[in-house]
Image 1 (tube, each protein chain N blue to C red):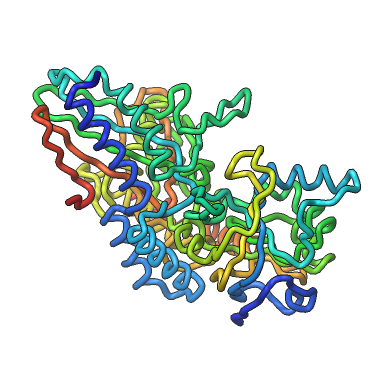
Image 2 (cartoon, one colour; image 1 turned 90 degrees about the vertical axis):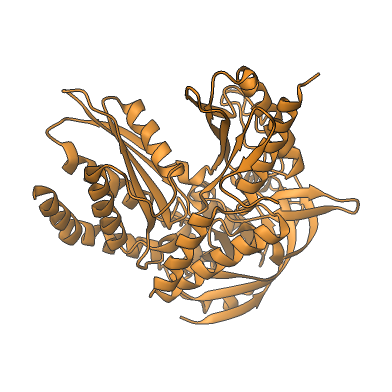
Length: 297
Length: 204
């Protein structure tokens, strides 16, 4: 019924969801370890110790790192010439339902009108898929992201005037972190987007927060400088791990931007909890699979 | 800051000695309750009926676990805390009507809960959010589960835990709310130090 390549993709996606849920990516784990080493607040340090121990236990036992296994989001980069590409929405949906039972993931897809939980993490528009069609790429690259509900609460998109500009942006970002306090499970990863419309800004913020590895600055010097200023300011707040104080409130800040409209300066802020769960793989037309984010034997 | 090993059922004395910043490792029976379970419990108690389990002296944990059905019962495989602020709506009355001595969650709770903790002798503690696999390891067994019709995350899970912690006391029974004090300090710092500094940097 299904082609071999479809089967390979489905199995790979189930594996990606398992990796995302149970095995924190190396860049995030290493950044947490650095935060633990640097921490001077004893309460924060003991919590960071629990966080790192938890990552190890989850990996060893294949347990979900956090019981909120999030909303399932896929970022797909695909070569349009590979025939199976148009079937991907179906394959991703089936794999999500299968992974929910198998791993298991917590069923987190709820009808906003009837309050009914679908039970398998699928529903209207869910899993959410973001597309990037790339000519002559030669493969399909799938990134599975599990976005926790608690850290989604502070997300904000706001359109400022150009006169408010960067100073206004800084206030939006810092007030967002302040207002959310301990709720989004700090130390957090902060994505900031700038653009002509609110939806473009928050979309870029989400990509910046979730996809770019921690510790990597923007290739654009202005954006990179803003990242450093914001990271320093957030960490000076002394909010710290789970709000108890300490030198690390944000593990990193990523800024992404589009050219704005002459009349608008839209800002988006997306926050991830410390458990930034993502896993990526490339699938080639001949069926070869290459895991990028994790070592898979 | 002191460290304590406590066992449920907790006495009023057990919790009255705790102050904000203290660390607790808890053993014994605890029950899970999120929004829906709080709501249902209060509806039952207001009608003058009894809950399926007597909660006096026990701890209530804000958690919606990932579970696996086994031949003999249930395994809890991931059980970190959910954000407690959503339960602020119910918690003061819940403490008053049930006699629970400890609330476990994350993210903090508000003035009504702080007042109820003081009045009835209870504390609010946090377990580090996201530390869910480690929390599941502290659950020795599922004693019982009620209200599965609410869905697995919202059901009331009765669990036996051993050395569950570190639980940090955020609201003690003397009217202190650690987060509220901290947020006032941070507000001050933002307005007096951080904004002036960052805005001068952007001028350059």
